[in-house]
Length: 380
Image 1: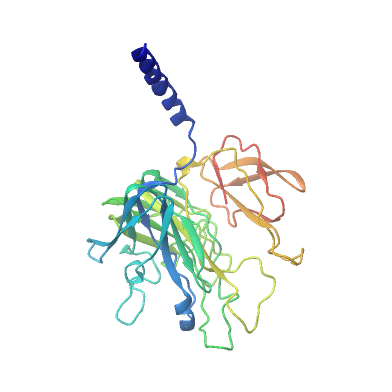
Image 2: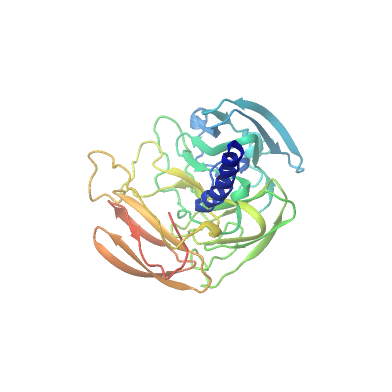
């Protein structure tokens, strides 16, 4: 009888476990292998350096051992510190800026305009599942993105960024001198395997002269792809020109023959403000986010929750409410979708490479994405 009960328990386990696995949706946030790259802030004030910080935030449900490594400029992986993390605790690890943002003897970045492969990544490994986020702090230096484990990376991405900023809202303090600087809309691609071939179709004009589809000077309305080859640990930055506030890398498409990571953002975004401070701190901030592979997109079930507004704000200010952007990849071109916001039902038409992307500003209560004609979309 005891053996029969044990056999029944085993049969029940093996019949239920696959069903549980099949019911899981979305991207697993935990893993044992991660790669990080930085969106470097554009701010040039030397006085703010002591207040900047760049970190990997690592935590786990389990007791685990985490190893940090980088890549030197020959491509050799250099092992760094190893840390034991107790279950349900975390480690805020300061990233080595000499490896993440390599510079010459005079402190000048080796590749300030991007569009050249460089070894500037951090490789994080663990003997048990961990969760990893990238975090930076400081004036016009604050950003945070959740890193995807290498097993959740894909081969096809659409970039979600913010437009270039030609020095709008830069620091102009009377307390210390601060060189005015402008900011690129940008993204970067991290290779996790050698001999990775990547095709990039920028939606805006790049610093390297690649013409965009619909954004930036010289846009032709037609895709102008170019290709690069990357090895494991290399990162390839694509940055917009900095003199055109309408130049936006959003909608750019990245297609690789092996899984890659794509990080997108802005070096110093100015978004929502209606006036500039003549004497004061920097009114901009960075943005950074790891892109979700197209494979994980869906045509339904996007749920949004509004953020709490700052108290005593002007309801008419451009920064009031939340902002949503909607992207598509479907190569067939244009699709219709229906949204519901406090105003009511709205049916819209949108497609690839839109500039600016389909955007909803000043949304107070969130939006619901309705019928998308079965076209998979991404909502930011």
